[in-house]
Image (tube, rainbow, N blue to C red; front, side, top):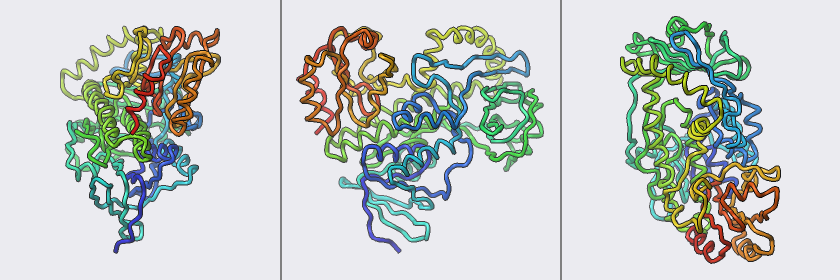
Length: 526
């Protein structure tokens, strides 16, 4: 039996990290939504363990970054062991210093990440509708009609303007939309567990061990627990069911590590996927997170990429729903985010095969060539020069950009130094007058940062009033405290930068020309 139709602007299906982040962003933006989840309880295990710097910058805008750091563990060292001999160590402490407010790799259990987001949603007066199953949907030019099963077994029809598929790698919505999930699934079986263990490691160290018979990673958790994952012995591949006891019996022997595992709080076996959806949008339906892409655990990119998917999409939905932008504006979500996943699938796939494959050539690269290269590279990285900045920018995702997207075309007025940030780049972390530039753009709006004396910039105050619902302005005059900021952004005397709600640069000019700016800004709007 069906209940009466209930309406909402956005229906989010799935309350994993991506679905929860979408709910958080829509709450910040004042957009009504419902979020449903088939499971009764949130995640209780470490799951997606690494929170990258770019995600922490998003958390910072939301006011939850410091709590995330308190609840997690910052990795200060990584040890890599080959056949149980001659470990190589890399100092990770503050490896991203000067690039971001969050220069360390944070290990935060997925259960705790989800709880931070759940608390944020509750603080805005919303709730997660658990034990609610998504059954079917149809869409037309006016909206999406979805049918869900409530906890008591009754069916309810929900009419929404948009549908967000955050329903995981086996996404029902993606399948019903007939969107191909391009890529492959690796045959190699992997395991992951959370457990207390006797480990000869410090609680802020990560260890990777590679041998002829195994590849494994060991990560510290709070309360003297450890997250351990790795490859399954070849002889176990034929078993229908692989248990913790199967792994524990030969783990130390295969890895050459002196570790005693205890009964785990969580144990799972899985196959790594390398896939991305051919389309992220079909009319009024959008794919985010694992419904849109799947990566191997190498690089810790999956959850973080999903968070940034919704961070990219939410403000665009808000503009369209509130009648500030055209429907076609939503096409930029696919244009900006899908190429990121496609690139990550290729890069993580190569890395995964090198560190885990049982093939002869991969083993020789892993056990002979890689140690040689790391002995050369680690000392260079520890000097905190170009190589460390390059590696950190890639892994932390602060280097992700949208320069080639249509929104970044014809959005740079005047001549700028080559190294200055460009339209489509993330707004960089720059300290001036004891302030972080990113702290100026925390509100969920466009931000016009004007570099000039107050008298020169007065005309922009008219813009601030005209677009006050979606645009804030900040005037930063040139003085001894701001000279470094002007130089870093390529501003000589006066100019401006327009920053999107997701902290990406939309426009820059080294001339205060209100006609140029308004002509550009209006392309975002109706």
